Structure formats: C-alpha cells, structure tokens
Amino acid sequence: MDLSLAGKIAIVTGGSKGIGRAAALALAHEGADVAICARGMEDLEDAAAEIRAATGRKALAVQADMGNPKDIKNLVAATVAELGGVDILINNAVNSKAAPFMELADEDWLNHINVKVMGYVRCSREVIPHMQARGGGRIINIGGMAARQANTLANSNGVTNSSVSNMAKNLSDAFASDGILVNCIHPGTTRTERQTRSLVARAEHASISVEEAERRAVSDIPIGRMVESQDIADLIVFLASDRAGAITGQTIAVEGGAGRGMNF
Image 1 (cartoon, one colour):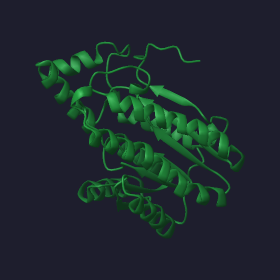
Image 2: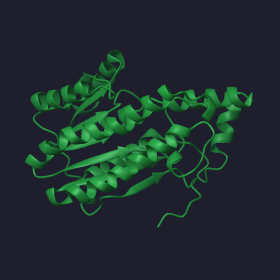
Image 3: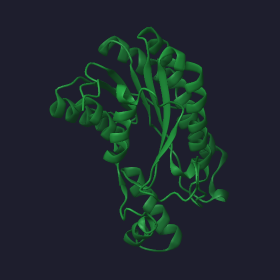
Image 4: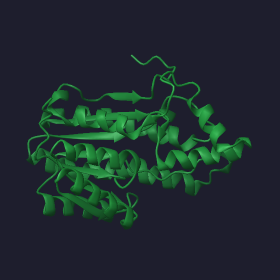
C-alpha cells in the first residue's frame, strides 16, 4: 500500500527510545526524513544511526528538553534548515513520576504538565505555520489510557493525557481548513523503557516481583500480551498518510482491548 510519505519531513519528540523511536523508524521506512529529539544525546545519535542504516533516509538528532521553549524553537528551526520544512509532528515526549497522589509534589505535577501538555502546545504552535505554508500536515499526540481509567500510580498521567486528547480535537477544528489533520493515540500497557520503570515502581509499591507485576499488568488485556511500540508506530504511519485523509479530531486507543469504557 502506498502511503504517500516519500519525501515528507517529520519531527518525533521523545524519539530516542520506545514509541518515539519505533515511530521515527517506521516513518523513515515509508520514505520520510525525520528529526528526532530527546534530552540524552547518546541515545539520540544511536537512534539516528539506526534509522539511516536501516532506511537510507535522513535522520537529524537534536538535543532538546520539551520543557524548555527555546529548545523547541531550536528543534523546529534546525529541522527546517537541515531537512527543508515540516509535514508531520509526532508529539510523544514525556517526563513523569509514578507515585501515589500524596507522594506527588507540586514540582512533579508541574514538570509533567510543562513537558507533556505545554511541550505539545509549543511544538504544535511552532510547526503549524510551516505546515500551512506547505499546504497541510499531520499532528499526532501520544496520550495514554490513564485519560480513560483511574490508576493509583498515574495521577498526573490522567490529567495530561486527557489534556492532549482535548488539544487534538481543538486543533483539528481550527486547522482542518488548512489541510492540517490532528489526532491523538492512547497507548495501553506498552513495552517500553518507561513501562519497565513503571513495573518496577508497581512491584515495589505492592511488595511483589517485577515478573508478577507484569503478569498482573497483562492479565486484563484480551489479546494476552503487552502492546508493543511497533503497534503504535503502525497506527502513527497510517494517520500520517494520505490514506487517513478524512480522519481528524479523533482519539484512538491501542490497548489490546483492555479498555472497558464505551466511547462513541
């Protein structure tokens, strides 16, 4: 299937690991050049090298903290200067603390909101003029299932994930006439480095082994396994393509059937 992504230019925040890395690689396999950012340059360079070697596409590694507005401006400016523009933005970066409500300080809440919510806002604000100039684009926000179900150790996740879903709908209404389509994906329990840290925290909180924590984490997933980063990347590539030209303002869960809410 031709997804018409050859020659497109994508920015993937949080692109050095997990879902972001899988998404950047998948987009490059479809012919897109990619700019990836994260705070750690070593992991970024490793990811960029993998993308170049596997796909032959350009992969620009830009060190950036999504909580820093200057870093975001630099990320977009560097992408435009080095790659030629921006057609696709994958808002994926996050920095949060898994802890019970009473153990989350103001700083923990504000850091999560600044990186995820305001980071997504700032990135979108920077790329939209470039997308308008190119006749359209795609913005995909990565949220999470904490937006739809309570979790003892994911208090701030629920707030931020709900926010980026709402943001996607608002942006979709505002910029569809410019050809900019905006959607949100809520990954379920997904095997990433961050998920590993979360399992360790859950194991410590419940005084169980990490293996038992994982068994419990997947026990209510009908497909019988964790979601993989590639599962999310496959949907990202589709939503970024011309094949999804009538899909905007939607929040789509990729959670193996684990969600119990009815969302119409």
